[in-house]
Length: 327
Ligand code: ASP
Image 1 (cartoon, rainbow, N blue to C red):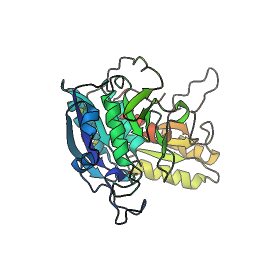
Image 2 (cartoon, rainbow, N blue to C red):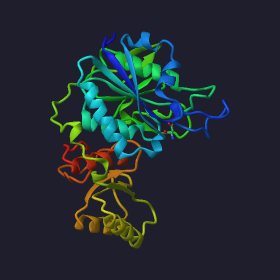
Image 3 (tube, rainbow, N blue to C red):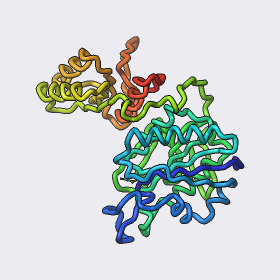
């Protein structure tokens, strides 16, 4: 059940690399303190589990709440280089939990990798008595090495579960089982180092994507921002917001609407203004599950099937020439 080729582990920081002064503390620690080599040392049987040579690289060292487009570009380009190598079978990325779902979706849209790319994380710092990082890293490597992991795109592994990049989201701010796969649930489970898939990998439609090297320098990425609709919206405030966003050079807006993607009438005025100014607008729902459902026969191209944070990434890439990925 092993891929036999090198597995490259890229460290980017997060709580998995975090340290607290008190081993009993699960908050109030410093994330992104330990290097990737130290994280690997905490899992003595990682090499055996991989069934292949492990290679580690420190790609970044940040708290993922501060994730930025320059780091995404670096990550996508390094992954593309590694995946193109005959002797690399899979990539594992250690990441903070806060924006893991965004990085996973970004990499899926840019790379749509045939080989496994697996993100993992931790909710407890490495110094905690209840540290979950070593187990998650172990599971991520087992998943990456599995001969049926390929063809499933970018994956996220935590708490013994495997999720697809499109579905994974962080749903709890504190608990160790902080992630889920929404209505789709997990793609599989990892138990005692063994992977159990819920179903065979679906046939992937052939995709023609620009190479990751086509990503411009981060300062040239179109800025896409998020707005949400809520009770008590004010037309004056929403208009001022949109005018300020236009003045700041924002190119797109994603609106997390109420329920089935609806927006407060006060916000509609501002959205019409945004569109008249040439901003690309996408509408999605702030509901945690499901997607906006259009009326029979309707096909509003502004409707996105993704949660707002992922719709933002899809729109940004679309504005840079990538195919649309949010329907
Ligand atoms: N703030 C941390 C991060 O996202 C939280 C975590 O990793 O759990 O990097």
